[in-house]
Length: 137
Image (cartoon, rainbow, N blue to C red; front, top):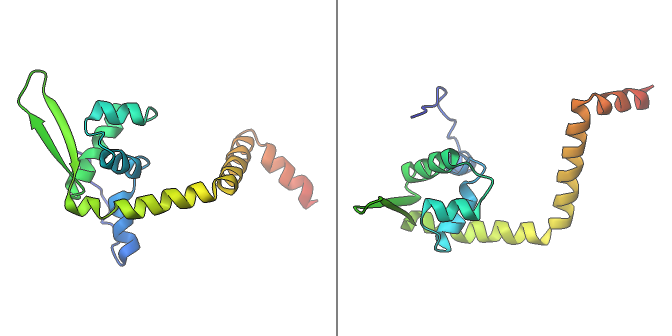
C-alpha cells in the first residue's frame, strides 16, 4: 500500500477535510453509496470514468478514514459491499449542499472550466504563450 512520504499539514478543519476527501472520485463515491449503490461494480457503472484500481484505492482510503465499512460475504464468487458509517453519513448534507451549489452555478462553472481547459490545451501547443506575447508587445 502507498504511504505518503510527507506528513500532511493538519492545522485546521479545512486541512483535515481535504486529507479525508482529497481524491477525484471520493465525494461521488460517498454520494452513490448513500443512494444505495453498495457494490464496487455498481459504483463503477455510476462513475464509468474511474478505473477499478483507483476505485478500490479510494474505497480503501475512505474505509481507513472511517467514512465507510466494507463487508465481505463468504459466497463464491466473494461478494463485497460498502456502507456509510454514522461518521460518513454526517458528510451527506454537505455533499448535497455542494451539489446544489454546483447546479445553481453550472453555467458559470462550465464556462470557466472549459475556458481554462481550452487555454491549457492551447498552451500545450504554445498558442497561448504566443498570443500572450503578441498582446504584451
